[in-house]
Amino acid sequence: MNAASFDDVVVAWVARTCLAQGVPVKITDPGVLGQIGALLGARARPLRAHGASAPRTKGPRAPLDPPLGPHPLGV
Image (cartoon, rainbow, N blue to C red; front, side):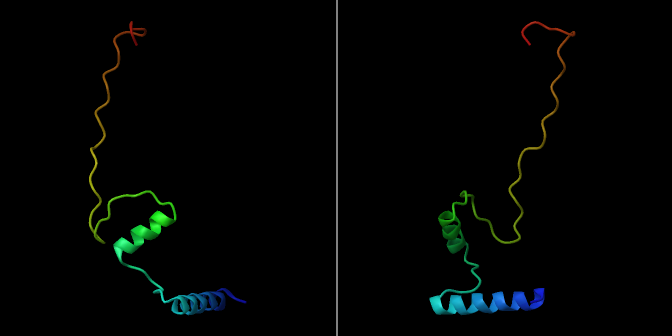
């Protein structure tokens, strides 16, 4: 069986199985996706709208000044 026909068989099986169970083939509702993620053990994170930019984090901090001398006390 070549890859294209295998993919077609899988797609048809998923469609039949979902229809028999009364569930959609594709789920797009963010609340439902969150519940599915929780059932599968995904870590919770805030949902954001599709296409929204990710929350910004602070940029890299400036490097620390090097200590004075090769062996400063207390370092």
